[in-house]
Image (cartoon, rainbow over all chains, first blue to last red; front, top):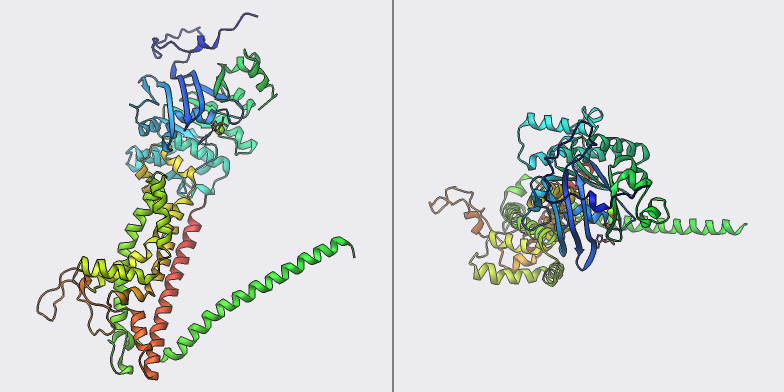
Length: 283
Length: 305
Ligand SMILES: Nc1ncnc2c1ncn2[C@@H]1O[C@H](COP(=O)(O)OP(=O)(O)O)[C@@H](O)[C@H]1O
Ligand SMILES: [Mg+2]
């Protein structure tokens, strides 16, 4: 068994141009880098919840964040859309560089509102607005100034199709979102996140409140979405991570222990801590 | 008998006792209200006709009516609502959604809670000094309306905050995550979702204000008045045209003061007038509360998390 390359070799070099990589016909699929976390730390007041984490996120690929409860997965995810700015006392250190614009998401020059417009989020518990199905999906577009009736309708339909919900709701777009089942509500939230054509979609344990069948549908959906958008998914469920993701990062106590291709992490992890976690010995 | 039967029997007995107690207390409350209304109706119903609403007060009991009083009450309520609702909403929204939680906002919070408990006559004294004399509003509808607005402001603020607080944080996060600004979150989500709770609170507060007497007497509301405030742009006796807001600066009386006035008169006939006025006031209050219940019911049905 040859030694596998260390994590660092997967981390893109800042000098390389992520979008100009030649992809030969027989070359393995190489994803350009969409975002790069560099030495990121995050503090809730004086409590350091994310500790000096560095890892890349590849474009049109699914990256899973796994690790035991409380290890900082949600905290890391919410740095990407500056959700932490909503509460006082929170502080970022380090960088999340978004390509190709090379803007530092957590830097002082980036506007939180703009980052949230470019990076969508799907939450742990389905949280549709108490408005109609149509309005839920249209809301993000309205915030971006899309006003025309026909354009709104077209883009809402497109988003609902993208979230595999269109067939189920096309005859009741004016009905309240809370008449939908839990799984449908979560797909509605996914449609709401997709409608605005984000660069990245963040999923924070999107299926933890759902039954197995609804969970299966969401996983299928994520599998489809990877063609179109960069996905970060936090999950508690190891099977889920291995099913849906291309890359996996294992976190423990706020630190990034191991990052690699998902197949590698789940078959032959380099760190014993990772191996213990995925074999279910703690967590 | 097995011990378990004994335990169950005892539990059932406690259940029964509590049920009987609850129902009797409920009946007592409802009964009191019923007797009150019946009493007023018995004494006053004979006086309650259209003429009673369209006549001014008079020395002759059977000619006296509540025209000035109900118009005064309605206008005062209008001023109170137009003052208290925007101020209370703004203060509630600011405290709940904008203000950082620190010692200063804590102090404001405690003060608002205390203000809700200040006796209403104290508000009257403050209004007398501030509105009537310092700001020169006089003993006008404006002074009266603003006085009552001060009185119910804490209730409106607290109702607004409670209603905002009952909205799950996940709704705010959902909107922020799509790129909404704070004001957009408030305007598009928080206000619509809390409208039911806020309007219920506002309506109940207005129901309290409509019966207030002491602060209005303190600022010098009249007890006898035989004219209506000038309608906007109407021709006045003086030959001048009234301004759009002249009515704000006129003297006034209100239903509870009119009623109090009649109660203190000698003679059966005036007592009947008082009862009739009381009945009107009571029905107005019950009507306001019914609207509040209706609003709350409709909003509850429309919004569930
Ligand atoms: N708002 C907060 N304030 C302070 N500490 C927090 C807050 N949210 C989470 N934490 C702490 O940060 C750590 C990471 O939490 P989190 O990111 O939610 O973990 P995970 O999503 O991996 O379960 C935990 O120790 C948690 O207690
Ligand atoms: Mg979490």
